[in-house]
Length: 513
Image (cartoon, rainbow, N blue to C red; front, side, top):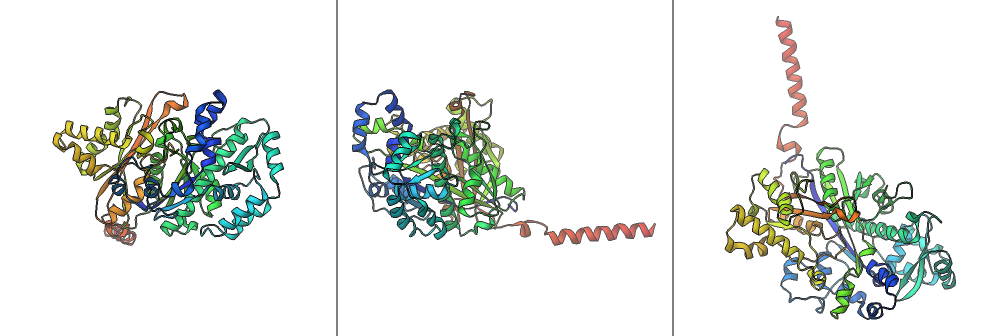
């Protein structure tokens, strides 16, 4: 295992954005266009959660590392009507309130597009000054705000700007970056700055979680679901380098990887391969949240008398490094791929991502201790008619295991329990797809509780109207055998010695002829 990349740590952040649910989630913005007087829009404000309720929501506490999936699964379902004693900060990250995030958006904006009402900005500055991950210099950016409420309203009413709201009040605006280019419209700029800012928050938390010196990170890969560019290259990028700049990764370059929900798994494979090849020693994979998916299943939640549970942006960052002999390794030689010829049948999809790579590695389905596919929170998906997504994946894997003879039919129920997990991730598209388990997997492997886990990313390529194909990749994370480059084989000094000895022998043979 001398040259496999290792999983050094992961961070996870949530941003509670209730006003963005109302003004930026596509379910709501579409309804405003097609049915502006709908009962749903009238009733929606009555189903918005407070920040305290979002913090005290068990799945959110799992996401930032204060609870485990097992603890969540042991709770009576549903969970939205049951509070836990939550904390803003967790083992793996934090939950940020909306007002502070609007301030962070301005800190991350380098083209003066984010405008905040001066009184609101002053209040937010005082809060962000106490945030342990932001510098005084960054927080001081909020001092530049001179606009009053009337000017902010004028920007929205007359300048095609997107409003920023807090507690139902207009407190800021995002200006358009071009007067003709729709790719630089205020709507797109808001989405992109939100994604960038939430990625920055994840990167800052990654520094805290792993203790990495940001100057030691050489490359950053962003795998969110937004597109950064203009009319000449609408998806050209680069979110990765933009976020790295704010987070202080001064020696990093970077690029963006896109694959819809499967994007993070593609990006992690890229990162692990770059490290294994020796191209870089430390690579970070990161992604910010998606405003479009806020309140995505809101109609079903309101219809059933539930709060809007999709009220948080998600984000994460993962550090992939050269083998340290301790951290779990990423086996990028055990990789599942949904190929062009795989097809869309569920059995074929799972076969290509799970059983095919295991067969090549000589492993059985039961040799993987934990599977991490789409980890959507069933509290969100069940009322919307999508069922329990993680459980459905585990049942399919178990069924293939029975078909292959890896386990007996009577073991089906226990397989789901022993090799699966209760879902907890927000439905932010790319966010639930395998990666929320990485930090837990690392801890469990280091503790000796498990030996091997499979991360599975799946995506729907037909959303771009370019192909009807599905997509997906998977890889194995497993315990390190402790052998680094120096201990696994012949060291560099030994190689030099052997070459020298060979040259001397060759010279002696020539002289003796």
